[in-house]
Amino acid sequence: MYFDWTYVIFVLPCAIFAMWASARVNSTYAKYSKVYSKKNISAQDACRQILDANGLYDIRIGRVAGNLTDHYSPKDNVINLSDSVYGSTSVAAIGVACHEAGHAIQHAVGYQPIKIRNAIVPITNIGSSLAIPLILLGFLFPANGVPVLSYVGLGCFFFAVIFQLVTLPTEFDASNRALKALSSGGYLTSEELNGSKQVLMAAALTYVAALATALAQFLRLLVIVNSRNNKR
Image (cartoon, rainbow, N blue to C red; front, side):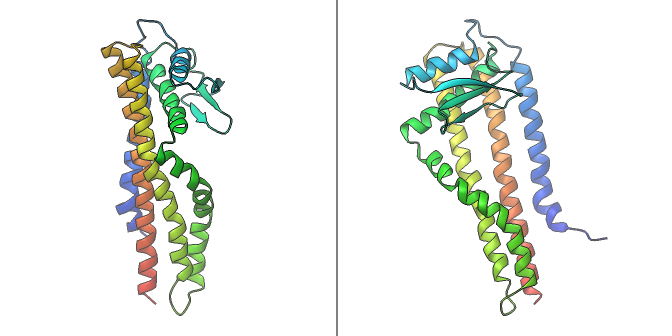
């Protein structure tokens, strides 16, 4: 039986961290979805008001099926809020909705990390699909004993790491914009605001986990390719 020590050392700890982060998001959201705004403002209304306050009148707010499937689509100029968020007056839902408004504001002001992330999406998608095939082809058809294609595959995979790296500040910044807007606009009390913050910070951990996992997978592949190269 083959024992893949590279997976155990590099990937498994990150996989465990990712599962913990996902569970924490769900538990934190469930906790604060039961804490309601004293002003009885819905997530959709808070999101709308923050968009309008920033002059983003043209951005629509739609509804999408699912739980925590909320997202902003700059292509369609719409913020889609999930069923559990849209009409809810909970501090959890309000935080999530206004986080998406934060992304819309980022696009409007030309926030650099989100521009970089959007620019490398096509390259990342292509690189991710080509990485493993190229690595395997490099093992099968080395050039003068060197798996050149494998290293090209590693380069392709590294774009996934870069994508996750620029995603991290983008998500943290969107949450900070949301919390500042909720505070300055008086939508939530300080106690309620803390609940929204807890939800958004828990969500941010999933992006930290995604970056750690992508980096761990890259390092694992690098070790495997170097090991195969050294054996030749």
